[in-house]
Length: 323
Image (cartoon, rainbow, N blue to C red; front, top):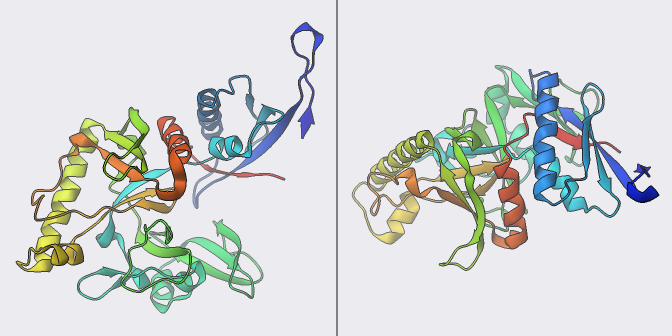
């Protein structure tokens, strides 16, 4: 949508308007406070992008309108509307249903969302109720979802109550699985309840950088005092589990096979899942050095965009762009 509001000295500037609709999570209703807070976060992101003259306004009960100068990039629009919900999981104990195998609790990534939700283990969990629904076409591709209620038509599959779907990117190496994947994306079923969130970060300590060891772009994060303690507790627990699984073996090959992982999840996708070396760090890792997200092929530009989104905090609800 184009507009030509008046500008100084009688000149006009061409703008376009993007409308974003709030999509609440299951059981949550979008409030006026949600929209006001979201609009405030979006303004901060635009300012950091150098678009301080952009206008953000609540437009109706569940819509936010953003007026940008013509020529504004699609990247800016995506970044402004990004939820940026950051969560930290103790990876192995959160796996459930078809995503975990054997006594060693080995991870198994599914090659498609349909396979994950249609698996007998998932169906069994869903008998206790559903938190969300997805609608698939005849080719098993997602048509709609996640949805709070069961949709009509097509093949509808539930996400079991008290679980969440988490994806991983095969190409950047964020998928941990004892079975090989032939697809670009893998899917897990996690038990709800991340140990940590973006609320445990010092926003001022979040920045893009280059890892001197790998020469690859990363996003560095610093924890709050509370976050440092939680991080240390989680990694200590992971070190202890890894040592138990290995039963006295301490060679490097065994460490890699037994080590437990700390998953950094952004908007439902694993960005990084470093393992905890229980030989070098038998008491876990103190949180005073923070953590990092390896960007891989995302580049330094992608690292800067992600750092910007994290610095401004997560949007309280998810938004989708309206046509």
